[in-house]
Image (cartoon, rainbow, N blue to C red; front, side, top):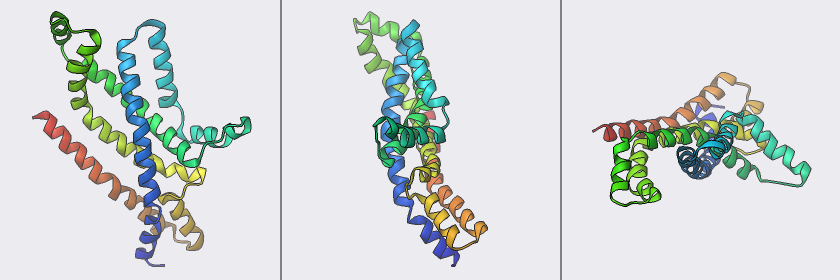
Length: 211
């Protein structure tokens, strides 16, 4: 099997890798925004509850979460597809990290802007939506690009719950053609080729925001 054959074989799993990444992003962004804003606004017990939810998804090992939701829940009568489990686990794990960027972004603008909103008679919610959140979202754009990269890399684990991503196809090829150096080097380069343009986009966004 030539290097080209190995590459083409691995790329058979690119569609799954891309789909899980996109679906995971759909979980990650709303989670990050909702819980980042909640952590910023709440105090006391409410903030503790929000923080515990964030830290559960952020602090748990992705591989254990995949196994738990895919293999353990059916025992108690709850069955989720491999697609749902993979997108949810990877997305909420990445969203947990991104939520901290959301919170930090909301804390960054000077307090005077909030006071100005209050002086204009704006409610707390209106001030958040019209003044604080738009500025924070601009500053957080590179973070969400990094979240996308994190999701792409995380898809290397979804073969453990039977999805035929690039890692799965590489392992299939390895069982037929024992050439681990060529196969896993090709897999490594495939992930690099996918992630590097996303990283360049993140740098471009940072440069644009910095102007």
